[in-house]
Length: 273
Length: 331
Image 1 (cartoon, rainbow over the protein chains, first blue to last red):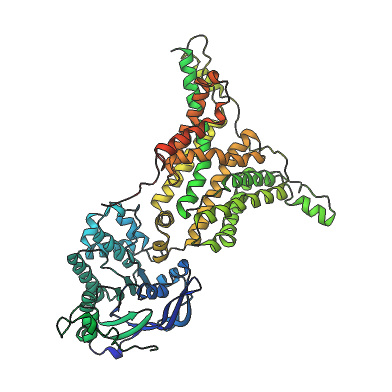
Image 2 (cartoon, rainbow over the protein chains, first blue to last red):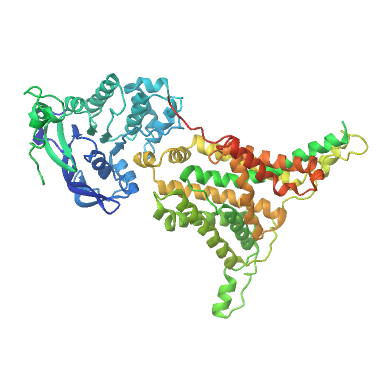
């Protein structure tokens, strides 16, 4: 949905230089800044423990229940500070997170799971949206009466995304949708994400370890490492960047090298952005 | 039919009805445990407190009268009016909702994410605190509930069934109060199940029971759900407190019925509403039947320990209870 003229696009979410501390002592994010434009798919990439999930949870404010805290910086949604909003207020404002590892309500049926997504809504349009979700995820319709705990990993991921859709969100924070899924299913799910982005106009902030897939579907990307943004740019550029190719896509122009020759950190570090 | 057999049936029926009361107390535990993982030790005291409050309001007693009299040198005890039962019940319900709110606001909100054992300890503290408040508010005398509930044997049933047996059978002896309690419990359970299955808040309650984080992420307020759950548990405690209170007087020992609920929970499973009901019934029937059949051989008083031994056997062979939440495992 995003065209090349990215500059003119309205900014939905703006994260400015945030620092997150768990349990008062463990510094996890050391100044992360990013923006999510309206109608775009923004990817947040990086390895294990880079701080992707923490960044998403800082935005959706699910950090609080895990004893994490944003100690510096600001988070703004549509220009309003939202760092102190509860998750439920954020959902009402249109920001909802799909957590890593699906987190479906195991003992509820698929349909009941989807209906919990409409919890904050007062407009009574949930029934119509249920059909919309079933349109995007026909598999869920087949399994709507089964307990979510007994459905497959792919179906659970679809259920989690569908559940978020039921809140009629403007922005979905999607955490690691590819986790534990077969490559074919990953393609299917990313295809649906792209569809939702184009047809329903939902903006995505996508945390993903699978750099290859994420950069193919996203418009813009940020690369996180040890709690800092080390690189950012349009997805197409990142895909061609030699460092990204080498470190995240496992490709190299120079052929196989001895491990001795790999200078570990050639990447340009940005301490503040 | 022989009289012995018929008396056996009578014992079973009475056991079922006693079981319903156990089930009611256990239900309060299950509700809170399912939604928040808290084993609420204070459930029994909540029943006592609710019953005390109901009696106090109905009799027009001045709350905290001892305290007020001691500080201001007055001699207040009663307002001098009596409150109709329904109004008093409504006021008590409001007080229990306020209690639920206060518990969430002042205790458990600050303990989010703590170990279960810490939450459990907090409920022990809560039990003692509530007991003290109950004493201070309404005094420590044994009270009777004047709700006008029917009591005593039901002659009608006795006469209607007398012809079943021979000359030495005089019909089933059933306490009217037990019959009423059974009906009340059945309605309460049906209402609870309907609420949790078919309403939005009920669905949210089950969602919270399954996964706190995910519930938060879709915008469910845990605070609100927990207050809701404690309020419902408070209401269940009120019903249980009243029914037991009518039977044996409202006094401190009422809070010990919580101990009777423990074996029920072990049998039925801590997370299952049907489990609490069936567990209660099994304990009720088992206890009475065991006393009737085996009691005379071992010198009686088996009711005191039978439930616990049964629970122990269950713990060994089926630790999640009869209806404990199925642990969903995908292969």
